[in-house]
Length: 633
Figure 1 (cartoon, rainbow, N blue to C red):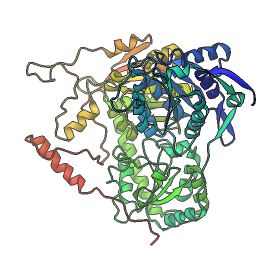
Figure 2 (figure 1 turned 90 degrees about the horizontal axis):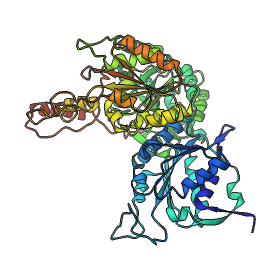
Figure 3 (figure 1 turned 90 degrees about the vertical axis):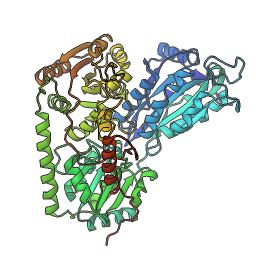
Figure 4 (figure 1 turned 180 degrees about the vertical axis):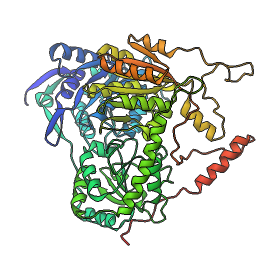
């Protein structure tokens, strides 16, 4: 038997995690930047003790950061992983019970967006000596089920370490999934609290440096040649660029492909920034929150080349965006699940490798000049629309519009600065209006569109790229969900510039409710009036004062000039700042001339709902399945 070292299971876990590295294109980095944790019973004496010991004896092994909310910690880790192109992430440790289940929303977000994060929730006693524990869920039909089993459907890998001997296999399996380019997401390894504290003799080899190669799957030559043939035969091809282009580091390859062929690009939320906004082939956002240019070209496209996209309902405008009767699809994706969608030609490969291969095969091929002139004119028309809304001034009521806020932040910020958002009306407006000038300059979480992600995600972005200013754009609805990590930003001296937009309600759902005939019901932050309805005065809530209570500077802005000055002050400093601005929720961004499928009540006594149902059925009639395989004929 070889050399061994005696440690607890928790100590062994921390020492193992601190020795894991990822490698891609010859570049190595630690897989885990550190551990975010909130301690309670279940992990305080296990993982907590191990982290304390490491901090005192090996400070660089796995640095610890105290978070304020378990869900928020996962968001911070996920945002960090996205900015590091999934090459690096964080560990998140929580107590048993509510501390653990608070992470479920974050786990779902990570898995839907396919972003790696390692979750270590504490669990009940393996030996059951003290059951039922505080916060333990007892099930009459099973003795081995705990609340942590709720992580199974929202994790890409799940395990529970009942005995010390199981730890090496569990951890190695977790690393395999975290570094998988196609099947990554939330990885959950549960640790019963008595097992965490148990001692065991571990082989020293377990703690040796281990490097995990992140693969770039190569496209099959025959399949790539078939894709090239389809592209050559197409008259109006269109690329839909998704997040996979970013994760592959394929922005330059995409630009080279478009420069050579003249094929235009529409971008999903995750794919925005894959081409900078003023690239000749960049038509900007596509789909329900897209630009009119991108959507007009999508409606006429006879071939859609999806690269690193999962074709969400927003990207496809609920399957109404691509209207040509004979439209076909070529799908380049590392995930087979996405590569087969819409009956497309499946090219299961790394985006960069596939794009470079296609560019070579298409040498000398270029779309017709008339097509170039058409999409160029459409894009120029959209850019004039953006200029108009960016120039909006205060409304007669003395309020800024959200369009003007976005425009001012975009124009005053630097090209390498990052905008962060996730939910409400802001993501859709940013998608169509924000002019992205750097591939990493746009970070909107829209796979789960999770309210509360913004501040926590902004923290992760700023930790991942400390050389960039990070603008967190958040409405009052999302802010009230989870502003807690402002305290963590102050604690860690992480500079984030939070633009807190107060519009007294849920602007996005309010507008959606109105369009569906539900009259903005339940979406306004108002007092209950004498009628018994929520239609009284605005609530006397001061969110600027709330933000100031976290111990950071808050600047109130009421005009475009004041907002611009506030941004300049925030950028000049080195500490987190909140900029508070009120906006008019009834001034919308320009229409995408697109649709999103949200069913309307089939029967109603309300005239508004009846009319909305008629409109819904008209749109529904244009929805289609894509079942015809692409053809060169």
